Every structure is written in C-alpha cells, then in structure tokens.
View 1 (tube, helix red, strand yellow):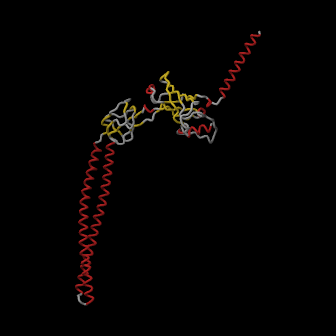
View 2: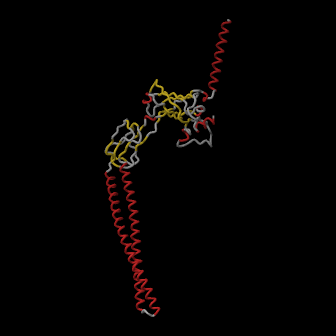
View 3: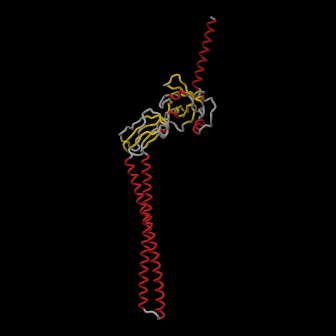
Amino acid sequence: MVNKLRYQIVIGAIAAATVAGAIFILNRPEAQSSVQSTDDAYVRADLTVIAPQVSGVIMAVTVDDNQQVQAGDPLLRIDDRALRIALVAASATIAGLQAQLELQQSLIEQARAVVAASSAKLKLAKRNLTRSANLARDGSGTVQALERAEAEWATQHAAYERDRAGLRSAEQRTAILQADLEKAMTDKADASLMLSYTNITAPVAGVVAQRHARVGGYARQGEPLLTLVPLDDIYIEANFRETQLANVDVGQPVDIEIDALPGVQLKGHVESLGAASGASFSLVPPHNATGNFTKIVQRLPVRIQVDSGQQQARRLRVGMSVRPSVHTNAASAQEPTPATAAVQAES
C-alpha cells in the first residue's frame, strides 16, 4: 500500500513538472530561443532580363535554354542593315557639310577682302569730300566738284555697307552650317550606338532561362527575349515572424536544409534584415486607422548568404524551398544594420 502511494506521488510530481515545463515553454518569448527557423524561405537570385534596345528581325540566336554563359558572351543578333544604311547616310551628310564649311570659309575670306577694298574706297571718297568742301569754302573749288565728291562718298558708303552685310551673311551661314554639322555628328553617333545594340551580349555570367528569342522572329524594343540566372550568386530570402527577430543579427551562422535535397545541409550567414514587412509593399497596404482591428504577426525578409566552397550549393536552383535555422546565440560578424537595430529597439 505504501509503495503504491509512493508510486502515485512520483507520477503526480512528474506530471506536475511536465505541465509546469510546458507552461514555461509556451509562455516564454519566442525570440529567446537560441535557434530561429522558418519554412517560409526560398532560394533567390537577382535575375537579369535581356530585352533589345532596338527593334528588328532576329538573325541569329547563339544560346539555348539552361546554357551557362559568361559576361560578354554573344547571345543573339538583330538585323542591322537599316541601321548600317542610316550610319552611311549620316557619314555622307557630315562629309557634305564639312565640304560646305570649307567652301564657306573661302567665301568669307573673299567677303572680307571685298569689305577691305570698299573700306579703302570709302576712306578715299571721304578725303576727296573733305578736300572739295574746304576748297568750296575758300572759293577755290566749284560747287559741282563738291557735289560730285558728295555723290562719290555716298556711293562708296552704300557699297561698303552692302559688302559688310554680305560678310555678316556669310558668317551667319557658317554658323548655321556648323550647327547642322554638329547635329549630323550627333545623328551619326546615335546611328552607331543603335547599330551596336543589334549585337546583344551577356552583361553578367549566368544560366539562360525563359528564352523566347527565335531566329526569324521579330524583336521589339524593351520586350524580354531571355533571362540570365546567376547561379553563382544566389541567396536565401527567409520571411521570419517579427517576434523571432529580436536576437537575429547580421553575420550569425545559419544551417540551411533544402526540401529538394533530403539529408543535405548547407552553411550560410545572415547578410541583412529587410527594411519593411512584405505587407508594406502589397498593392493594397494594410490601413488600420479605422474600423475593427485584428492584430496579425507580420513577417520581415531576412537575406541569408550561402557560404562559398560548398559543393552541394551548386545544386541549388532559384525558387527551391528551404528551411534556414539561425543560431542567435553566436556572435555577430559585424555591426547591426539600421533595420536590425530598429527591430531590437522595438522588442
């Protein structure tokens, strides 16, 4: 009987301890856990969408889907015949304007010579007029001689003004030709730039995906033709509950489990914490200033960098589901970011 009573007391104590432990765990703040995990995490990469800057028929496509390319490798070529014609036309226009400018410079020199001659004749006519006026005043000259001198001065003055106007017109014509030449040179540079856009090369290294370009198809300016996925520069985007982030910091180590690769665990580290929750960027962001309010725990993105030198990391593909576990009791590798500091201050 005593043993049975003792047994019941032990069982009761164990049950009470279990209940107390469960209550303690349930009431303990989530962020106090030394490991923070989430299933809301995916492999991401900064995709590069390739779209032409000129429209035209696609003449050649040098890559296939899932092909690895390096930065600078040719991807496709667009028909450039019309642009080559435009470049030749612009070059011809420049040559013609340069020839006109050379001719105009000769005309300006001639006009200056004519103005110089007219100026000399005008000065001579002015001296003759002064002499005739003095003689007429002294009574040594005739009125007819004075009138002829005045008429000659008027004629030479008109000729001088006419020649000066011709010089100004020639100089203005030169300015117009110079402006036309600058525009033609701009047109040539633009044609050359447009021509260079017909040969599309890879701006970054990556794997070709979503290749819509086909030989003979028509490429429209700005319309995506293919996408480059930089598999050597992938990362994890994990959406943690805000209640998990009090002790999450930049540089903390992360264990990464991949749904598609059972048994494989990769190593990484926290690279940065998002500046806003996902709901903040939705088309209709939440607005709780009016009406009934129901508090919903928000999720904030945490960017996790996969550590280099891991062979299995090459098997990761963008969009894969993963489960990262952040070890928050480890020392941070760097100072907290402003976003991290803000989260910690609010906790």
